[in-house]
Amino acid sequence: MVLRWGICGAGLICNDFVSALLAPPNNVHEVVCVGARSLARAQEFADRFGIKKAYGSYDEVATDPNVDVVYIGLIPCYHVKLSKQILKAGKNVLCEKPVAVSLNQFLEVQQVAKDCKRFFMEIDEPFWAPDSANLPSGKITNEIPCGPAPYNFPNSGGLRYEADCVKTCLEAGNLECSELTFADCQAIYQIIDEVVRLTGINVQCPPFLQASNRSLPGMRRRRRFVLKQRSSSRHFHSSSHAQYRPSTLSGSRSRHCVSLRFGDRHDKRRNNPDSQTRGFLSKVDTYKLYPLRNTMVLRWGICGAGFICSDFVSALLAPPNNVHEVVCVGARSLARAQEFADRFGIKKAYGSYEEVASDPNVDVVYIGVIHIHHVKLSKQILKAGKNVLCEKPVASCLSQFLEVQQVAKDCKRFFMEARGNFLSAIWSRCNPIYRKIKEEIRSGNLGEILHVQCQFLVPICNVDRINKPELGGGGLHDIAIYTIQLATMVFNNEKPVKITADASLSDQGVDLNGCITLTYKNGGKAVLVYSTLFQGKNSAIIYGSNGKIEIGEPFWAPDSANLPSGKITNEIPCGPVPYNFTNSGGLRYEADCVKKCLEAGNLECSEVTFADSQAVYHIIDEVVRQTGINVQW
Image 1 (tube, helix red, strand yellow):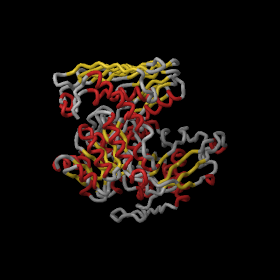
Image 2 (cartoon, one colour):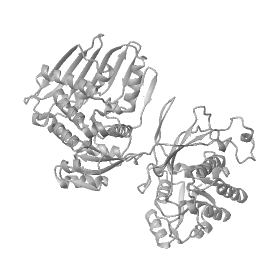
Image 3 (cartoon, helix red, strand yellow):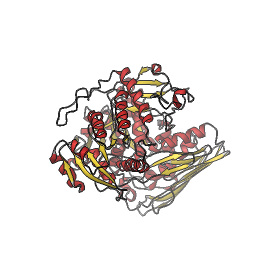
Image 4 (cartoon, helix red, strand yellow):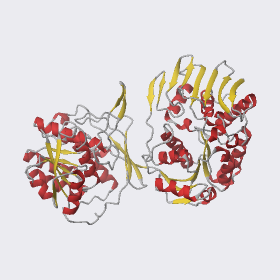
């Protein structure tokens, strides 16, 4: 059958739901009518989707004889009364979450649905609707349905699955969805009730006023808390047999921790069909609150408006997007800075980098300009009292890097008040995959390190920053630095006993490709190959006496790796603006690392210390000496 829908509401989520309904295959659902608080608004919504009937009230949707099921997508305070009203009108209901503010309210709606013998389901709208997951048996993926109108929320096409579930249930004569049963919802609301009791959240649900536009008292008063399971936890046995996981609810800076103790899986109430607490918490009085430290929002200033700066800012603003704020951006021209600011909704744009350094609202400055300016600009901003995260390479040689390091150390504010932080943006080290690789190596599971094979091959020889020596040209500082940092990480910054390097130089003396071999005292080697002439496989393998580690492409920002203990994967953060470079969402990890350092009062990032960077530049200096690369910066 074709399921005929009536829509109550004309807002953003209703837009997404209807668009998902009409996604291919579009011959299984039909939207018969839409109702809103005003006929004009309903008509505009109807025109957008080609819906034949528009109503100026929700009552008319409930009484339309051609409607099989009604979708409710209003402001939550109206959900309880409208759900009961539509159920009593003889219609099936799919209601947006939350249906109610408490377990008692939800049970009222549930009872009406049972008395009227009508289908009712609370929609678990896509928080979230994933398009992939990693299971012990392997990675699974899913295509999100694409509707005729753009979605307002991420992956809202997943709402189609809810609609298809309703259709399947009605065709089978079921009044409850097996994917989200009444018992599942009751379990959720019991926890919500106790959290409200413990935190004192002001929950107010006004009378149902169909034409009211008043703001609801208490709606802005929220608190943030973390739901945390005890170490001696058991599985949470609801009808879906889901395991309870930590969750974070948005709110103010005040944070609390809640411990939950779950009932025994053999609890008699779980098998009692008449019990309203089947499979719930065995004791709600075991909750405890622990105050946590306030979380600051890190305020960023951006120096540069090019591709890498765009990727960095997009990664900063990826979910969760309440921990970083971009205060301003500076470029060599105000027009370019303003265009960049408009793209990301940044409030302030400057026509110079000095203005970024002197902005009093900036906590840390990201430097993403061409690398020949990195040394001078880093020192300038550090002296202005700002924390600095600078793109690689910071310098052309070890002596230049030590200059910057010394300025960071000489800054009294930095040392005395822990207000300064300098981190070379070899961002691979901050990737969770790299952290696991380091743990695997340091644990001894890999045995003695015998060999590292790594290559970085990309056709970028026609790019100015590569082929012009006055712009810091050459592949060594641009791409080979990633292969070098991997080797120094694997061998724990051990100084090679021998460095052998060869490179092909252009007519202007910049390196187009090269091969670097590092030999260590135990006989271990690292063979590092790079080229700016052609595209190749950009992967890495670490061989040990007990096994090997294979790092997937691109090795500098991987989303997976194969370890002796098994395959590990990582999701790359997705920002609001498309990335220019592969897996640039990984830049978010280094930003989060900076935030943790500043919150903890650390002057160095443990993932990329001064010693780490010095080990890299020591090798770079020797490669330049052996190959005769023309370095002019």
